[in-house]
Length: 144
Image 1 (cartoon, one colour):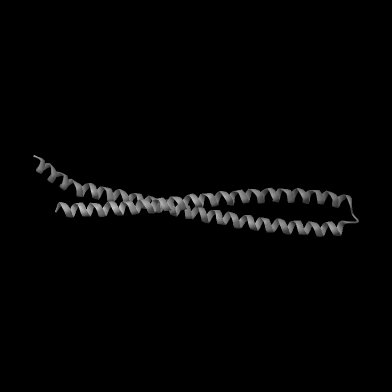
Image 2 (cartoon, one colour):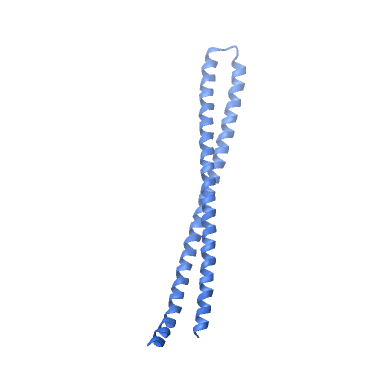
């Protein structure tokens, strides 16, 4: 009986080790996702800075348009290109924020899975404690 309990206990501890290893993998994946998220936010900051530069350039072009009526057609065409680029950048920024939302959602799923694994691990340790109690009682009886 004692050998069977020890074997079951060994199985439980092997399963605990496997769960801890899986938990480590999940935390490594969450670290990688956080790093990717930081890269995306850095890219969005760069895009916002570029967008500010484009709007500053469009302000300069609008001022030049008021001064140079002979070049108005050329400046209007350039202005249209700048607004098309602004639209493209805004669309890219929206895609990046959607990706950020998706990554945050995935991160939440990973943390929920981690919580579930920790809860399962606690159940296993409680079960191992419960299984060891009769074995300890039997060992105590043999000592006396």
